[in-house]
Image 1 (tube, rainbow, N blue to C red):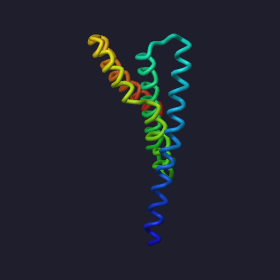
Image 2: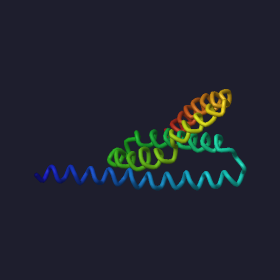
Image 3: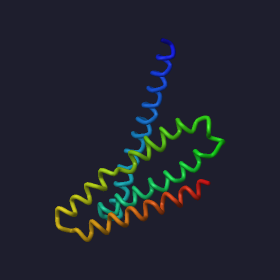
Length: 134
């Protein structure tokens, strides 16, 4: 019975770490959107910039967490930063909705351009972050 309680407590701790990271990530995304609004950057470019920042940070933090010096806490830090914070900072739903909106307005070339640009630069950002994290 005590083992079950201990496992439930660990699950609650994990959920709280993801929640706390998610709160921070969502608020940072909101603030980044507001800051980028001041530079008159269009919505598609804002989504791309924020998602590429998140990709870079994902690569960087993944590289750091694979380092042995963080091995004791790497799972918990991963829950907080990678799943919680970065998961809510970058949102696939906003990206997909932007592509849908462009397509429904018959702007297929722009939608394809954003899709390809996002994928290529997202992977490149992740790679650069990973290399810098090592």
